[in-house]
Image (tube, rainbow, N blue to C red; front, side):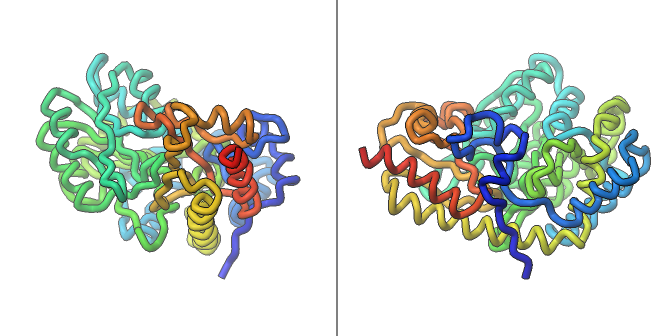
Length: 384
């Protein structure tokens, strides 16, 4: 059984990525969605081989990426998408905005479900459309899509929806019945659904994951999925994602995108993604999931002991914790005080929408030691 451990803090501070360069060295950075683990050995080997052979040219027009992802999805999700219905691009955000440009007209409305990944708002605007907010429903024990509110938005003329599944920042994995109902609603009103499934490989085994396009004919008719190895395998800087479709009509939309959309795929990103999606990387991914499972429970214990006023629900997937600190009275954006006084960088809750007031997003894709130190620092503010 492979164990995946985070690198020591001293080694992490030698990194030059956003997580380790945005703030001074006395700040523990738990804000941006980068993890602190070493690369999977298969990926390291693929990248070293490319450097050694000078394989740094243009991305080829024929690559094994789509077929490798198809086999990965079959092993991990029980779904085997057709490689002929996929096309690569630089990252999930680019895939989303390029599809939005084809399925919406300027000024049309696109449903988003806050609190949600902040760039969603910008991607809709970049495509020339307008955001229509239908917040997640808080059941008291979990979050779920507000299908009644979504129906009202579709009836009112919204022409597309951005689905985040697993949901960022709550870590919610939407179940098959909910996704099927959403697809049927979208088909009834002729709405396109673009599903951001970047966190799908990080769904915990006890929860599982249902790809939107795997829910039936309605989803195939209206849906697009955009997927990547970047979050699970920490490859965001290498630039590679896949746009996946499941019907002739949606496939034609993606095939009609300019060739430059595909040319923007990074060569190193593609090589790394192929290595990530091979069966040889499964043991590493399983080890990572075990580590994240332990961390998400550790965070619950730490908060209960040291910041008992915090409200936190263990996420179904990923390494992002959505924490409600409203009861502490630290204002709409408590991450500002935590950064200034505790020297811990968390993602600002209000960036995710109005529903994020009083909240923070914490990245627990790190070592137990760093996670414990971060909560202890925050707890000093409570102790005061």
